[in-house]
Image (tube, rainbow, N blue to C red; front, side, top):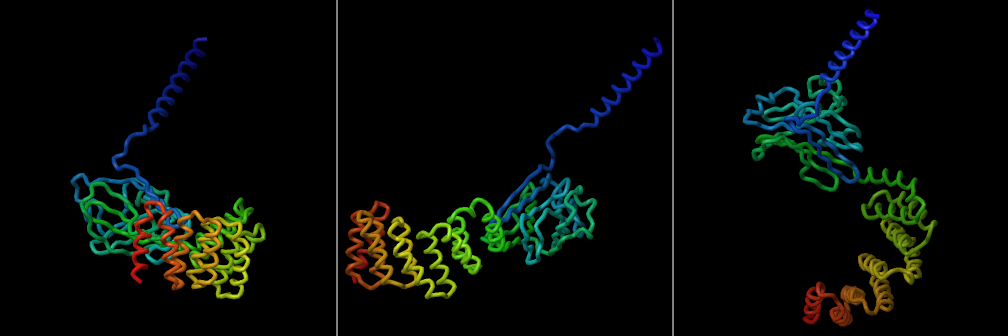
Length: 352
């Protein structure tokens, strides 16, 4: 009986020691000296995400000392700085596939090497291997107002590109990320049309409209707009088809679609009719444009905008008398924020 009691006492003590050891090894979550940070930017539909730890200067000499020249640096603090792209991109003109990369840099006084490593899970640059490189590019560093904390920002943004800029102490270094926005968008459109947008005429029309506005992939756009019309023919998709055919150089086919539009305009909204009139004006088809604006005016006699558009159309057609007459009626009906603009037009017409 005594031996059994000792056995359980020893077993209990051993369990307590193991448990205490296990608990002693469990780390607490505490603030990090180099704070974790994350920045995101979209270029078109492509998301760029940078996760890093931000060290601060703390009265230290940074470049050539804390961060040596000529050696691979983790481009931040603690574990890997990572950069992710949801689509294929170009870095300084060189292609880089979609994915997540460890971001490393080799600083130099006059030139930096930016490294995108396929290994993005290691701690800092301590386990970096050049054989894991997906891409290396070289860039020139620049000066910057003093900055205590290291930051990544997106600068010099455009519709198709942005610069990723690292700033710290009095130095900054940037590399350009460019995206083939049209190619990415068309790929996303194709995927979306396999889902709920593909069941409506509007989804297919919207897809074709993107191609019209961005002047790309007309052949596929024509297939999309035809599908839209098959689901439900209306002013919007027939007008888009006419515009698309004109862009494709198929003037006769575009003219046939415009004939259909004139019938469909009877059920179109004021803004839709007005928009079609301006499209005709932009194509210098003034007789048809005037006919469309007159149709709109007949249906919306209390609309200042209908008279305003009619005045502009007559002006472009060279009939200043009719232009002036319609602008005066537009002025009498216009909201306050439009009156000054219309007054100036009337004054200029009265001087002719």
